[in-house]
Length: 142
Image (cartoon, rainbow, N blue to C red):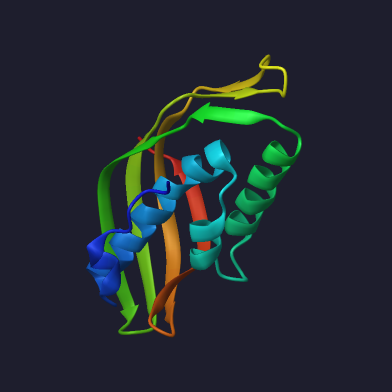
């Protein structure tokens, strides 16, 4: 079952943008762990290359019988900015990603990622009352 959508996502505001960005980040390990792209696709805009590469990566992992465990993201702070009221927003998330392990179809470890502290900036818009992720930039945080 995917993470629950935050109630604040219902509001087209800076707080709503922060909630939508936080939700996207919480979905990231979920889509890799399960292959369920329903919620991911509902947020992903056509211009978001991070969104499409995540979708493709998760689909590939699951089509080949692999699985990924870990990678949860603990959010330390989430701040939204209203760029054009009711239309364009930005959100910055800072948090800690836990380590993850990728297994092949036989259960052998094929990759390990140590995780780390990241700053994620997300460009969002509102379309037909729904949040759309237009772009994502991830940097290592101090």
